[in-house]
Length: 325
Length: 307
Image (cartoon, rainbow over all chains, first blue to last red; front, side):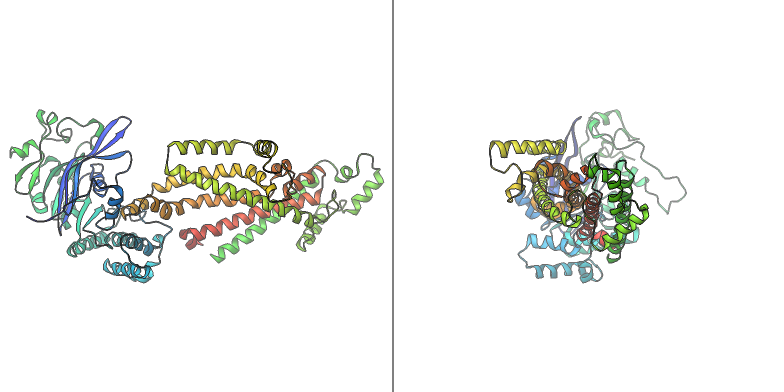
């Protein structure tokens, strides 16, 4: 069996709100094998980012991780005290965010911001740290690294800023890099460059958990995909299997909502309705409210995540019975 | 950058000239004759006319103005009617006291204000936050003369730890500085708190946390510097208003500063003195905002580039 860099089991995050408790992440289990890129896909608000934050230990008040375990390279990290947890962040597990425009400190030179991570996690001198920064700048293909080192964020383009953020996340050679919508704010050509950069990092030994709402991005780089809906995993499979044989009605809806040039002609389909309010989830399958194949049973009982073929799991009664058309 | 500073200087000169012109005209069109005020009710008409001519007040307004400007450029701001000394000399000696008072007040206000704001932002909605914010509201809303008299009563009259008035030693400046700075401290505390809370919500704070920085590191290295930008602007404005004379504080504590001089000038219809003190106040405020812009550019690279 392949080695797991990240093994998340039954992760649950709760938020106390004035109107009641919501669970943006509900009993999520996922694994990232060493040397692979694993994707989480879903609509806005489905809990993908919150899952990433929970893995990082960055859930902010009033949110709280209330259950589950997170194993990083076999070591349980979710129960570690904050001091220990902090030492892992940026060194063994790091994260890049959606908004390269605002994710860098505007009043600090970008080189120094990356250097900060090196100084924090190693015993380097300033000179050694700077050398390390320039090296990673070259690695993530930032042109003229020496000149860029002294730039302020506003002097760089969005793509370059994202490269700086990736450099910052990768500079200490983490075991796992979580990329939360790393290309959403960028234009398409830059997107392709950033994705191949992630692939190169993977080849260099950094496993990646890639979060995206964009199926194209997922299809291009991921080895394995988790589909999330309303805080739960509804389907998981190898990328190829998922794209060829989507089982869950929600996954199918997602695929139909993506315009395909080959098919052309037809009007673009949408999934009717919106992601349900997490305060008023149905007792059963959370997709039942929007599902065209919904049966009376679906609203009362929560289907289990059942394996339909090796490596392919679906949370749907229809798929379980092998009947989902 | 250098060009924008030059531009700002040119602007400052225009504003300054405008202010001189306005005060000049205002002081001459308000009812009441300065000579009559000076000489008392029983002065005879001939003497008043002679004095008026002697001081050049019978000349057309534009000639008076040009004469004033010409003299002012060479450093001569006229002679005070009521005190009989050159205005520049009076202001110079008063300004020293005002400067010391302003420095003391600013030191007190900013140390206290920033410290409180920091504590409040870090422990948002906890007890110290509520306590300090209550205090800062008190600081903002309590009139200076109330604070001044309260301090005088408690620390000078009852506890006798500081002199009640006068500026014979630095101890004389402590109570007035606290009274004067109290208000600024409240403002700085509130601004620091809200600005810091806003900064802590920014995306780069998340990046800093993801990097492995602890709470303290995130706060000091990333949030504070960004949060201090608006606070700094406020502090420069505060300082220039402190410098242009604390009328009430100086009066209550009998400090011979610019503010008190201004009160004397108004009471005595002392046109040259009043003009001199208002010119000083204006220059200080303009210089202050110029300084704020330069400081801002030093701290915020985004502004540096646009200049």
